[in-house]
Length: 547
Image (cartoon, rainbow, N blue to C red; front, side, top):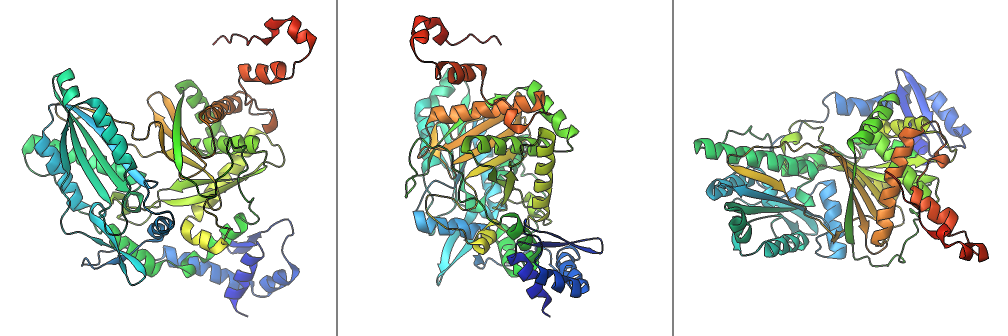
């Protein structure tokens, strides 16, 4: 009997096989293990265990060689993640949807020559910042330019013009058919310089997501500040640790050594985990979903104060969960309540830098996990956190499968206006960008996506630890939602978090999501009619809430 065929049959039947110690175990849907499959597994148990273990052996005992430099600058294939974004670009055309902008204001005694030299050092160090795409036949390839494009340096008269330039740069699309995928501009703000009596420069760096991710932006800032500080101190270039290889080497390695044989167990897990997914997240939209989305988006922000943050951390610890798991569970519950669905899928990115040497590279390594939560039994908060913990840890254990390969394998119905597998994203940024003290320079990160921007998903909730507690950004699709709806959703999220720490023993359906004012409006005002209401107008006045 072909053992591979048995494992594939199990996967197709929604059965996830795995080995624990020397025992063969499985997880299955409510229908359980089919009798014929059970008999096959029983008859060939030893061979199946050996087969499943062989997948682990390949990844953990060195059968997959380490990533190494190729030794030349020949065109390299696109990584799986890059190819997905390239295909998106082929469908929707040039777009700023996957721009990754970064903006910092430098005010004080700024050494412009040292800054420009530092930028050139980093551009030569990281091939991703000099990468272009091309075609060989029908296949896209990437290669690294020998020399970087010099940063554009401009003097701008007014701060308003600088801000307009920031917006224009953020929204300027890359041409993936030959253009370099990194742009650098340095703007001298003459008005701000005169106002403060010192130099005032704005550094704008925009990379396409095909060559960068959030981790990469942290690398860029840390190394830029280190270069600048050393050049100002000694006039000599800094000694940065050498890179073992470039991203093009990683992409070639991934295409050569990672494939179905390596992903076999991961694919079986995800097929089981994502079987019978709901067609989409059915939120009540302010506008009908267009067949051709514009991807216009906007972002609103809020802060979870240090007191509630500390309570959330204690709740997480008491449930043996991480803060990430607790915040994810609350977001899934929020979506369940708003959509009226008890089966919620949320996407969440992971760094995916498990290969030695990748942690120091600028490049597109991030992978996306699909995290599914069911709310069909109205459990309490500790039970929800325990289930979320199990879901997240299992997903992390099976993160090697690229999201792109998962979508291809599951083949969900594809349309332009609905992203496959999930429509809401949860992001927790835990990549610290250390506060650097540059000689004589005050550094201020500038918001690069205020107000209207781009939205890749219906909703994206991003949480980051800040000095004031937890900083929350909610990005929403302007094609679907109005600003007041998004503001209400974000307020409900904060209310749910407060309810989870205040009354964790309650059933999820009993956790308060509305503020006192909203509850009064919905229960009293909107349900009150008739003469009694007219006779007592005071009943229609919203109460004063004492903080």
